[in-house]
Image (cartoon, rainbow, N blue to C red; front, side, top):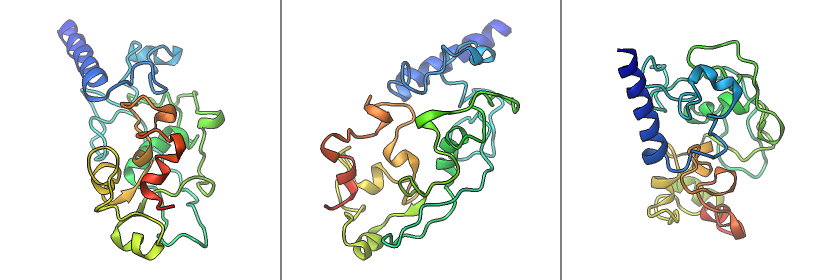
Length: 207
């Protein structure tokens, strides 16, 4: 029975690592070689996902396996922004559950006393005022009001569809609008589109 369970787990991990999620192997989110990943037997996906015993309170990610941040964030603010800022949305909180520095990277699989924290340039913290704004509604109305944004319902994303269809989550700009946690495209900084010549920025910003 144990061998069958292990086989299923390994097949599950292999499937989502190679088919569903592109190049996560050898990417910045491949933790299989980390010493603290021993309780995951060096698996790639287990730090965030599990085939059994998932956190069913997390609706924005499949089979979630990592502790979720409960921090209160200081949102981006600017006199020139026309959107309403608030706390990070559910999908962005999953990213911040490591990158805000309040939750240990090794707090997964029910562990809550981990001691490995994101540091350096990967540490965003809970003050988001110096980061690109997230979790705001980006729709045709905002594009019209702003005057320097493309209409996300009609503008091409560069990925085959519109900005709204390919980059937004529930009509909102989130962390995953610019970054692919699974690194399918293989771009620097896990970007969904290369930012050479500011291509990613100019996908939304009409400059």
